[in-house]
Length: 425
Image (cartoon, rainbow, N blue to C red; front, side, top):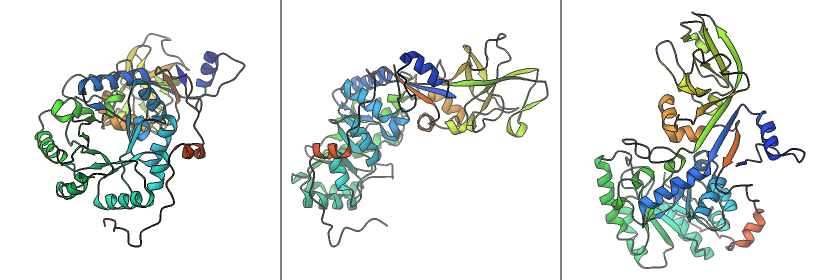
């Protein structure tokens, strides 16, 4: 088990265990990420998708789990391709894993080519203007790092239209095009019988087959479980890696990844008829014992978990028992009704479990009124972070930018075209 050294300072005077215990006392909560569980989830997805390559989507700091730590663990396990959202995310991942292919889903903008070349990553191009600008950069610099083409088959968000994709087929089939992947994105893959799945599959299969010799990717986490026709040459799981259920119409096939604990800062009693929390929306129906917990919506524990006199909110695990939230979640604190616990089962300083011990990310998302993706990516930065498994001892030292630039091909300065392609309005 390894802690994030940026969060938990170490001292040479104490053992590692004593250092960790002392350091954790400074935090109201502890977020533990099980890298072995992430690896196990990736291997399950990989096995489900064989013979397709199983990549990993680690955008948004690996859905809040730590992109650098997750990338290193998955790369050791055999993952060779990663997807991120921005160039800056790619830069952090590249510093952690020098070898794998990294695609940037956010696309290409004029004047960003040198950034892609410097860290040897690939844009996912979803617009003809982007493609023209990318071509200009590659022609003028000789850069051959590759790019993906994103085709819209129904999301109506990013991607070339089918007509635009057909229009570039002659260019692709002429060779020396630098396109290393053609991809699309499923709209409703988590709904097994949604007719949009078959419609998108047919559209993507038709256009992808015209990209001669270019690997194709369609399936996201849920798409992996739609079967072999959706898997093509590569699958791109994201949320499933981190324990979110990719098959919400059935049991979750993935292992839980994140455990979140927070500290009791006070035990107090209220009389029957007294209210608790902002707005006085929750009223004690009996003499009640409360545990006040050092976590709130500023830490990613959403206000939607609140309870009131007519609605039961989320639950937390206190001394092995589920106890309900009492009243509104505030910025830094929540109150928990622990009246039914044995005397002295919960004390000031004890830790309670908000995520883990049977409370899943999807259960918490239900109480928050959102999805597991948002739960994970909203977990705040006020927790101590602990990583376990994944052969992680210490994060690898990050090379200086100059060193990284020396290791990768450096294109000559880009001469801007006199009349660059117009950007979409």
